Length: 322
Image (cartoon, rainbow, N blue to C red):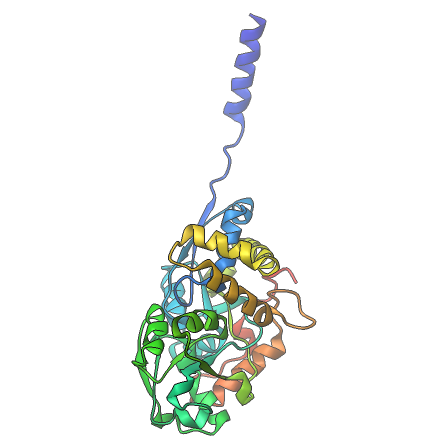
């Protein structure tokens, strides 16, 4: 009888106890496919960082920063991984209320790659050539700023639309003269082009200094559920920290989820990511209002913006915990 009473008491306690809250289901859309540069999302999933933050996260393949921004704005994805310059343009010209909540690429990774045998060795050599890139990519979006800084006629350059997955093959086979690619993707291009040599023309070398990719969310999400945003950002940055400290392990985790990704190439991308994510004097992921203002200046100097954009329009402070 005593055992029966104890059992009934235990059952009563469990019946009265509140049910464990269900995890918040969220998604993040990448800027372009799945690559080593995205490994930290999968590290955060694998190591339970999102779960510990009460999040059930799905990572979605994207096709360019503008695509990511539009998917977030449409509610197709909760978060996006997108270029800050594209955030300026879509806000100014399309009135899309999306903001940065963390910066991942504190340095600009924008570059154009060509085969050495093409004869392209300097920015001026791009005139009269064809460059391939996804339609919504950040590199063609900010090319007018690069052209202005590098002293070339952007009207003499032809952009060819191609998926991010097709770029390495198009370049290696000489189907186009050059491709747009973030510097983190150099290891992939090198493998496809070997033994041919590559030429790299970066936007930074032309003197452009601005923020690049970060995590974005809609103003509505940020205002209505700031705790959700903070939890996602904190868990993601935890995964990023692990990824940067152990590129080979992170690449292996990514390969487990996406077998098509070469772990050696992915590790090479992560090594390049170390430089991009490093902002001297700033914590990982932190957003500096002065750098945001500089990013707006770079974009405004190359484009006719329909509406003015202020730094406070661009980002939500306090989401990284810094």
